[in-house]
Image (tube, rainbow, N blue to C red; front, side, top):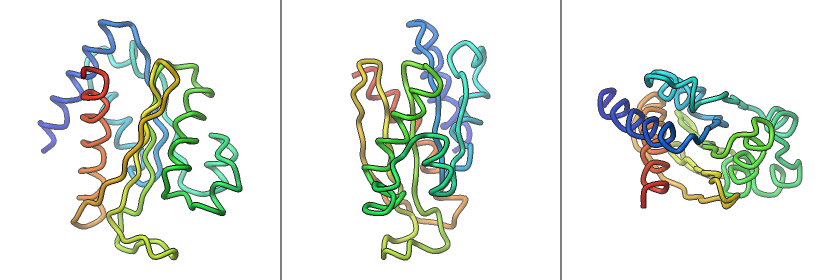
Amino acid sequence: MATERNDVADQLGAFLLERQLTLTTAESCTAGWVGETLAAVSNSSQFYSCGFITYTYAAKHRVLGVSEQTLTKHTAVSEAAVSEMASGAKKCSGDAISIAVSGYAGPDGGEDGIPAGTVWFAWGLPDDSIRTCHKWFDGESQEVMRKATHYAVSELYKILTS
């Protein structure tokens, strides 16, 4: 799977370089794996500017500007939270594109009953629109993280090229 993940990241990197677009990441449950994947691409410094790892509610609020009301009402593992994470990362970085990921990798789910393996994604696009979706991935924590990382990168490439 590492080769597949890197192949998609290579394709995304080439696409971004060709169009002179830059990207930032806002990660929670993937703990920087999306950023690590992007940074491994040749010439990544020309399209990947920075990443934010915000595990806690306080960090999501303080660093990315996710509203306390969103976190209280919807939790960090929600469409509302990842949308605000994607917007906040774009605002902080000044990049054209962002990827935001928040979920429960496991072994436990949330106190709100959301099961382990649930991950929300948001992609902030150059036209300032935001696309979101959620997925459920099976496996141990690291397997969920790996699958979520691959999905975040490959889905952005699909969105940008369709």
